[in-house]
Image (cartoon, rainbow, N blue to C red; front, side, top):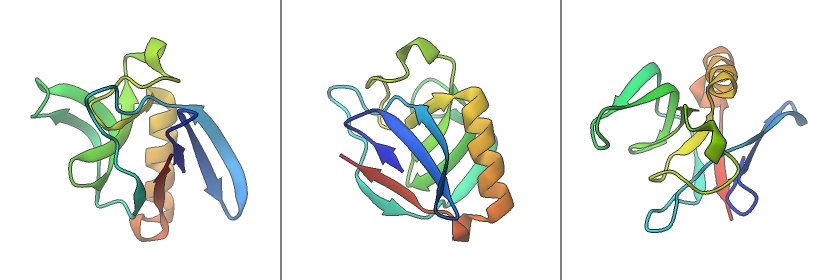
Length: 114
């Protein structure tokens, strides 16, 4: 669950909060869409063709080109800074990516809310 107002992501498994992490979502002029999705694809390392081949480690794509992924811009976590993706500290992105791999994309829901 990604909360745009608090710039946090909460990972809930079996009804229990497992993790709560700071994130960066869309900065002014961009949008992180709200809604509920199942992940569509995951990549250990992806490079954004749209944004100068920027690295997107541990990407979990959930809605078109929108993904939850690691970032090197950790100083910006906790406030809007992205082009629309949900950025996490790379270690946290790895944890989330591995969890999605383990439980399956069909058993994972990504919820983005205001």
